[in-house]
Length: 85
Image (cartoon, one colour):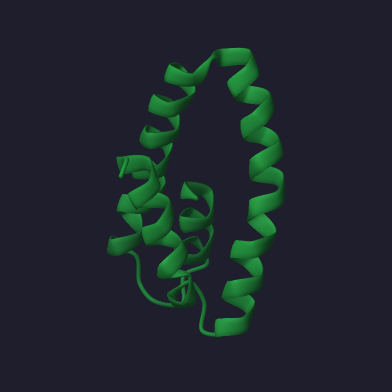
């Protein structure tokens, strides 16, 4: 399994911890999928597969590493994992 897949599925499986309400967290992770697929399709056609893959891994790391340092209830603790997805 590729590292990109592990990051994506790790964030998806822990999505219930994004917000205090499990249903809101599930809705947010589902809604982020649609624009991300469209965005990825166009950017991959423009940049190519390898630069897009490496930049998406960097973005995921930059977005998700600070989440562990944030306090509960912070709005960034919800937004940053969604950006990492």
